[in-house]
Length: 182
Image 1 (cartoon, rainbow, N blue to C red):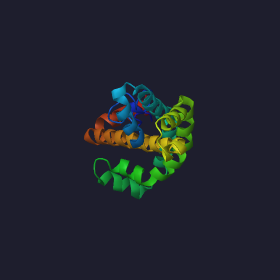
Image 2 (image 1 turned 135 degrees about the vertical axis):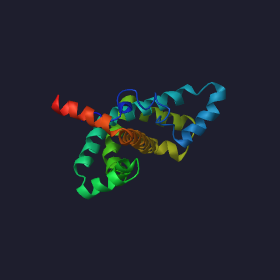
Image 3 (image 1 turned 90 degrees about the horizontal axis):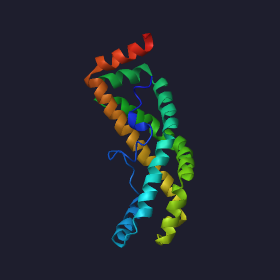
Image 4 (image 1 turned 45 degrees about the vertical axis):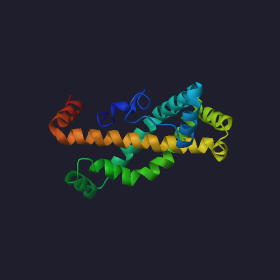
């Protein structure tokens, strides 16, 4: 079932979508603000793009994890979700899965951030702008920040998708039936 996984969770999703774009961590945003009038904001902008591209690359793993959570849902959970608010399934997934998603996403995001060069760029900027303890822990802090932002964006769009399905369940059901029965 591909429909429930939002389109934004594919290529170029985070960076190109202002609703879920992961901003620089607060410390780096402050440094960027100081560097911008001097014409030195480009490395910060580059880092932000690399962070978002790293989050995008980790989304296939997120899809697998969330599908697993749906399969583990009990009948009582499903009844509560059906009777709940427009985003009750998203709330359920967030409540039950977020800690394990953070654990599962962290090495995946760290790897994708390393491959996009974001970790190296973050550490370089933190040292160049003398950001103290942030520079010593830049890789860990950047990874945690991107994991948090990626999950926030994922749950944001899952809630949007859920609201659309609840508003027009017939449209979703007919698409599903076409996939199942051809």
